[in-house]
Amino acid sequence: MATNIEVMPYLLTAGNPGSGKSTILNCVMQMRNSKLLREDQKFLSGVSFGSGMTYQLDVKELNGIVYMDTPGLDDIDKRKQAAEAITQALKRDGSYQIIFVVTLESGRVKPADIATINLILDSAREITSYGVIFNKMSKAALRMLDKQGKQALLTQVSARYRQEDKPLPLALYLRKYEDLEDEENAVAEILELEDFLLRLPTIEIHSQNVNKIKENEYDQLKDHFQKLTDAWRKDKELMLQQMARDKEYFERKTEQLRVEAEQQRQRDKMEMERQGMRFQQQMYATQKRHEEVMGEAKRQRDEERERHKETERQHRKETDQITAVLNQARQTIAEQQQQAREEEIRKAYAKEMEDERIKHQEELRRRTREEDERRERDDRERQREAEKKKSEEGGLLQNFVNKIFF
Image 1 (cartoon, helix red, strand yellow):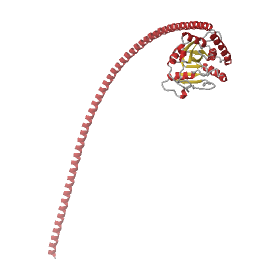
Image 2 (cartoon, rainbow, N blue to C red):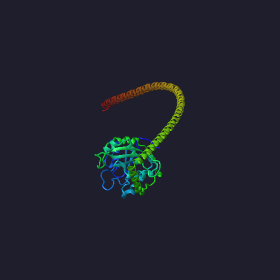
Image 3 (cartoon, one colour):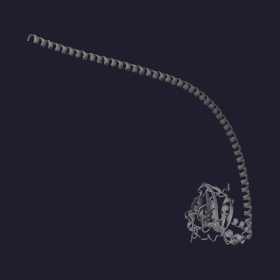
Image 4 (cartoon, one colour):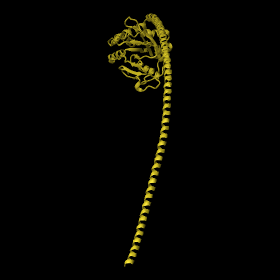
């Protein structure tokens, strides 16, 4: 089912040469980018004589969006290559915004554009809605375009070769910008484009559901729609009948999509309510679990606090014991130091007394030795004197004897 979102992963434009799809993509990319686009970021656009500027799939990526410019099928020389390029673009799997860019000829949609749209829609049946830009419309044509005229253009562009459900088109009518005409890689600010893209539904396309575009049927379809548009032009009543049928069909389809969207909205609402209830239950369970966890954490904190207090008490007790031991040790050490000091003093005093005794003994020995030496000297002196006296006495005696006898 199609849904509206602001930006899509894939934005694909399709149209025949000269329709202006490359310029439109450049304008969209520039409006969605804060900086001026570089030339290598732009799609090629401008004048091309003989064939379109886009001859193969051109892909640009900007700000997370993939823009795809596909070649047109109206160029017979490159039709097969163009069909393969468009098929390749549709086989990327993902969300798409599909835009067909067409131009009018004498106020009517060209059969070539209707044929192109039919071939692409037949290739990808998952395209249930798409955008159509009626490009390069003159100011006069836009002034004259009323509600009936818009319905006539939608009837033409949505004409189907096979009688099948028609995808719902979203139309945008753009005037011809003279400053963009035939300019190379031109860019301009077109405010209607962004609003158009915001309203354009996105669709999911899966590669396995995309068939090869039957380019060999292009001329047959083009001739068929040429005859059909000619018939509508000649028989206005036939055209009005088809417009009425298309109007009724599109209104019914729009209402169906509105109902489906409302049903989807109701389903989404119910799903959101269920998710809300589940979320509330989860929140309640989470809150309960949180309370249990917090209670358990508080209990653990209290136990930890008690253990901490007990540890502190034990620590204080051990500290007191250690302090007492240290005090006792300090007292013992002080006593030992006092005893050591007293012992040192006693030893010093004993040593001093011993030294004094030894000194006194040495002094006595010295005096005794000196006294002995003095007595020895005195004895030797007396002995010498005695000997001298004796010698003198002997000499006197000898002299006396000599005198006597001689």
